[in-house]
Image (cartoon, rainbow, N blue to C red; front, side, top):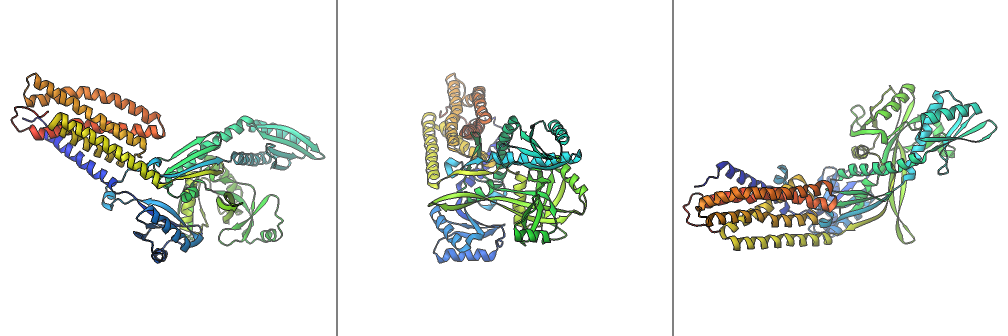
Length: 627
């Protein structure tokens, strides 16, 4: 009689049901789509735009599955990538420059599966294609920012210590550092001692003196410069990871190459436009002392004549384009933000961004606002974008920095680490800015020096070959087991099939990205999984040869084989764990797949086969076994 408990039958049934349901989304491949988003200052996505796109596709006889508004973007889906390309061209022609049309692979999983958290397994760059970027970090800009920061700190130090100075300016010549001009030799000597004591990363030396101008040259030490360069790379890597998380790309590859370059590979991104817009964007806020309000006569005069005070910049107000003068002094920047979120200002009803500063930024903001209540403070929005231009018949990417004032108002009361910035044009603009600020500011601008797109044909070819490899390996193993072990071999085949189903279900549920090495891990798992059944069947045969009854042979076969199966799989599991924790890229993908496969095969090869064997033989009187 069977000694297999009922609760184990229930467990096996639940696991099999789980495997089928959560592996099912992989039977619904994503469909090619074009996603339309509104650029800055463009009209929002609405039903009229949806109708306009539908009519444009219909008029050009381009077959589409659907065109619908999803949140703040419009999505048009197509049957295949060829129609997708034609549809994208038609959409771009009718919409113009106010909107961005980007390729996308849209999930086709039924809503009821999505409601229970079932989703298809994300595919890696080698399987579904994607984009590859090679980015050059402008480390000179990081050094320039640090020198400007030191210049501001030195000014504050000299004012606090009441040392007379004429100017503290960063030299326009690279490597010359900061030039401090003082009124007397004694002032220069005092300033030199204080700067050297306060800022140990700076070298201070006397410069040439003429009349009442006594020069002090301040240069960042070489070790600090090297640290700044390394820090720029490290911070940019972290910022890129935060920003790419917003894209929702699974298992992105982001790593340093050489001393000043970063490689980014994004699987499933068909069009690099949106990715470049996000990962290459340098958008941040600068809080500066204001010089008058928008439309101030001094600003009007500076805009008309071009004569701008040496300690000021002339910007334009966002939205109204009015000229406004802003001090060159920077109180805090986006680098000192720890959190940012968008919303609507309840008083004015306009979009806003709530920001939180770190301790250093909060201290600077508190000091400034306490000392300047009733005076203006401007919020400058700085954005670096890239444009493609034709130069000598070749496409050349050039960067363009745009700076505008989004808010210029008098300080009502002191504040420090938490406050809000209003004056943004739309909720989407506020949301985009909050995402960039929350993702972190780039320590230094980056230029994309090379980019490539892995086409869908290569990805499809790899998927087909991987699928054929899995199916061929599975078929051969199933056939060998069925021929050699007869009925017990067929039971092992059923377990092997469900091992594959449960493995795919677990990988899909936890979001493991499937790559070609992962496919190899699946094939190896299927080959290894049958080993446990071989051990069980041979143990049963051995017990039968020793004269045990069929039921006793089955019971002994499972009990005696379990220790050997566990030992063998534990050693495999340790190797897979080492690959997962210490490996990267394809090696890690292979290790993750192998580790999950070992755990699922332990269940299916032992518990699941035992359940089926008990169902078949448990309530029958047996003279022999088909093994």
